[in-house]
Amino acid sequence: LLGLLGTIVGMIGAFSIFNVEAGAPMAITGGIGEALIATATGLCVAILSLCAHSYFAHRMDNMITDMEQCFSALLEAETRRARA
Image (cartoon, rainbow, N blue to C red; front, top):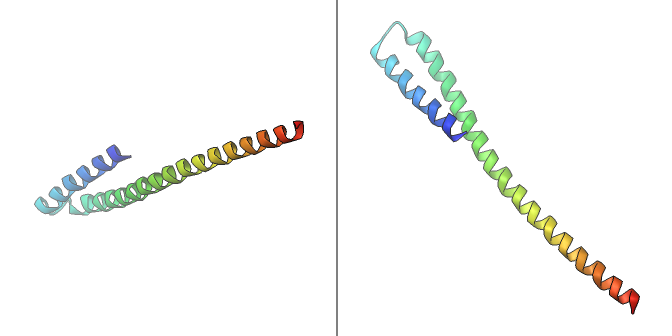
């Protein structure tokens, strides 16, 4: 995603130069520039969302591991108590 975002930002810069230097193609490049800005905004949102998702998924995995360890210890203690 970061590579794609870099490509989009580069293309926005390229089309901005065309807008300044030429008058007639401005209608075409202006529309493409707007589309690229929307794409870059979407990529920024996607990258931030992916980071947040990764953080919370990792945190949940740690919680599940802790709960499994606690349950195993509890089950082992109960098994020892039942044998005694």
